[in-house]
Amino acid sequence: MATKNSRDSSQLRTEESYIRYLKRHKANYQSSIYDEEVQQYVCPVCLTLDEICIARDEAEQLHIALATLSCKQRRRVYLHHALGYSQAEIAKAEGVDRSAVSLSIKKGMRKLKFLLQGAKHLL
Image (cartoon, rainbow, N blue to C red; front, top):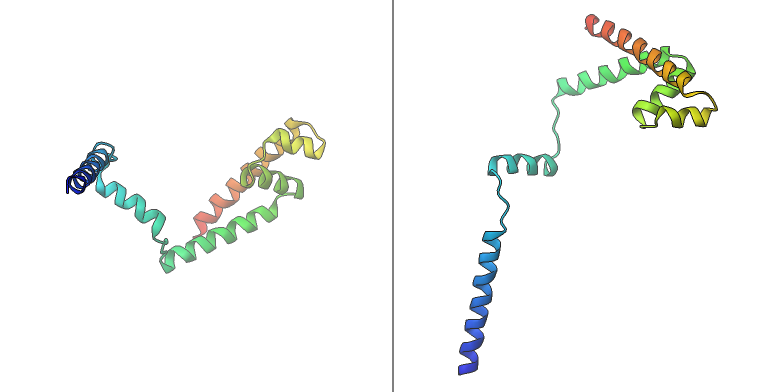
């Protein structure tokens, strides 16, 4: 009987210790912020029909604007901004100077900005 009581009290102490541990190490956060963060990762994003149409139109405008760039500019802008290659990496792969790549990307982005801003005014 003494061994059963000692096991029960030992188990009880272990459970109480674990509960104290959980309370002590509990993350401190506001539940509303936590709920939003969890919801962001768990729940799929539901777009309205208007949002879908706007996104489609913007993607189409970008595609048209990219088509106006020269082949070199389009490739360099895509590699740098979409795929994250550095200008030095692009220059090395193409066998040209980094300044040529930099200038090409700047001119391409300037042209895209001009075309896309003009497209916004049409909407």
